[in-house]
Image 1 (tube, rainbow, N blue to C red):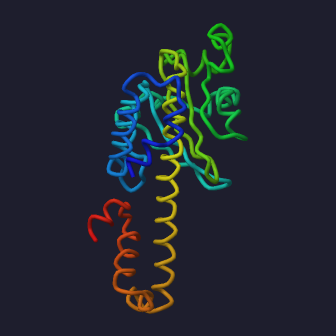
Image 2 (image 1 turned 180 degrees about the vertical axis):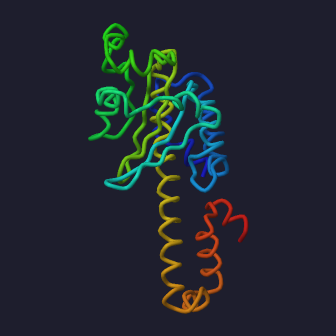
Image 3 (image 1 turned 90 degrees about the horizontal axis):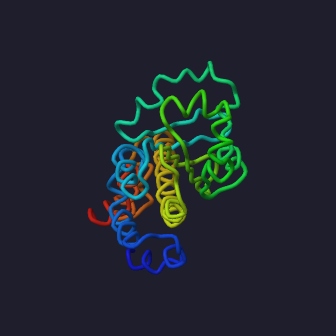
Length: 232
C-alpha cells in the first residue's frame, strides 16, 4: 500500500512541496487509519494532521442536504470559536468566499485566494469574527464525495502554496478513508436490518462462508481494513 502511495502522481507532481514533505506525508498515511475514533477524522487524527499543515484551529465538517452537519475539532481547539454567538452575526460572516466557492466545487482553496489583507480587513467577516481571535487566513479542502465534507484550517499567518500542495496530495487518500467509513456505517445498518428479518445475526449470515462472516462481522464493528487483515 505504501509503495502505491509513493508512486502516486499526486506526490510526484507537487512542485510546491517542501523538502521532507513526501516522507512526512507517507508516514502520516501509513498510520492514518489508527488515529481516528468512531469517525476516522476525529480526535487524534486532526492533531496529527496539524503536523503537516500547522494552524491555530482545525476542524472537519460533514453534512448533506437536510441532515444536520457534524463538526469535529482538533482536541484543545474547542474554545477558539466556543464563545461566538453565531445567531447574532450577520449572514455575511458565515459566507466566507472560499466556502461559497467550495459549495459547487471540490479541491483546496484559501481565503487569501479571494481577498487581500486590505480587502479582508474591511469586511464584517473579519471585524466581527476573525479579528477578535487574531485569525488572518483560512484554507479548506473539500473532498470529492456526496454532500459537504471539508477540512478547515484557520491561523494568524497566511497559508501558502506548500500548504495547498500538501492538502492536494492528501486528498485522494482522505477520500478513501472517508468512503471506507461510510461503507462501514451502511454495512452496520444493513446487518441490523437483516438480523431483524432473519431472527438474529446467525440467520442473517448463514448463506456466507465462515471467513466471509468473520470479515463482515469485523467490518460491522467498525474495524479498519488494516485491523481486519491483522485479525485474519
